[in-house]
Image 1 (cartoon, rainbow, N blue to C red):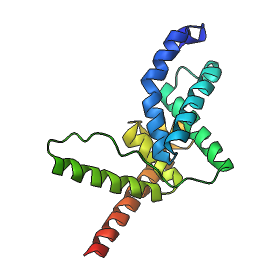
Image 2: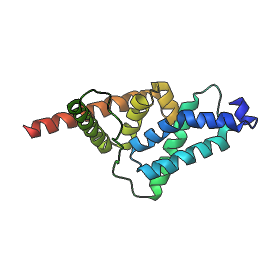
Image 3: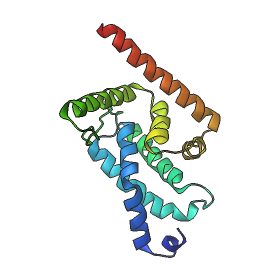
Image 4: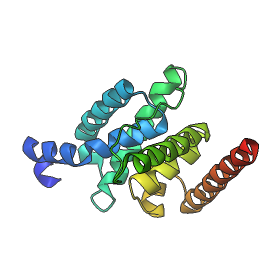
Amino acid sequence: MRSVLEGNKEHYAFIVKLYKDKVYALLRGMGASAADAQDLTQETFIKAYRKLASHDPDKSFPSWLYAIAANLFKDFYKRKRWPECELDLNQPAPVDGPEEQWLLTEQRSEIHRRLGQLPANYRMVLLLRYTNDLTYEEIAESLGIPVSKVQNDLYRAKKSLQRRMAAEKVNMR
């Protein structure tokens, strides 16, 4: 980071390349459309570059970056109607046959649909934990909340997903 602060833009380009897909995935997971997620990803890196001097080097850079993205998302959708959760499910499935690939795509689709029904704070902690592999402490730091709230929100989010999935299975029988 020191070299970026000293004006080395190539190092910042490397940082952007390293984190852009994760920031984009976080924003998509929060419910941003593909176009909005692209715009917000760019805004995240522009804002991070401008504010880089304010980043505490003792704290996690990814957490700080995800916090910027999350705040931009919240601000963007305060001005705009909250989106229906629109998620990109065109990721290739790591399976052999077409039947397994179809099943995995269906399962992924169902999980993403259910994620879109959760409150934003639950969706955010789930995405940061399981998509971006952040620790409880890093999530707390990113969102500016206590670790105990992160743990509580994760627990409640998982329980809510389980209940919703179980209720639909009962209704399908």
